[in-house]
Image (cartoon, rainbow, N blue to C red; front, side, top):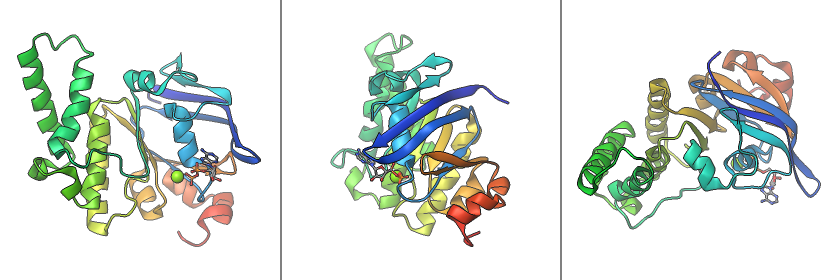
Length: 251
Ligand SMILES: Nc1ncnc2c1ncn2[C@@H]1O[C@H](COP(=O)(O)OP(=O)(O)O)[C@@H](O)[C@H]1O
Ligand SMILES: [Mg+2]
């Protein structure tokens, strides 16, 4: 086992009568590409919101690298290394691709001591941005306004924006939603590659089962606030309960 990055303990969440988390216990291990799946409305996005601080935790606790973050504001969790992308595209449309990534890079650089002088700080930031653009496969369109990108490239840009703050743990909520198959492959290959590099641990919410089973090292199935299954793609594919409730004959 690698380092346990995230420990969720007895986490509960209700929206009125709807329960999306029922005393959930879940550990996320560093370096293990994990997918969270489950029917629509299962509470996958809500779980991410609770972990990142977009929603207040009603009960239970969340530890990140052994430290309690349950009630920390979003920005403090980001600073510790917990980041996310949203289910809908969330970038500055009028700014260029490069500028979209430069903003969080500079914001992050301003907080770290190794950037001592203005000039070297800027130079280093640009170098980081260029490297990141390469990693997410957007170098060729770096000077285009974000709004001019294809939907798939906009999602890649979002991943780039999230990576710019160098997260330890990154949640991607349906990163391939609305993409064509070509874009999908590009995004997934990028995620696979970035995950292998090991700096960032990825947790995906994804409804395309082909993607989930080909990409993930671990699959967690959420259903009515409970974890219905948790294991390797193979274990999940052959889990009777999961098949009954969720997968049906789709695998
Ligand atoms: N902010 C909210 N207020 C009230 N109900 C919500 C809110 N966010 C989500 N829900 C409800 O909680 C359930 C889980 O939603 P969600 O986490 O978005 O599911 P998933 O991402 O698994 O499709 C749904 O019934 C949804 O309508
Ligand atoms: Mg969702």
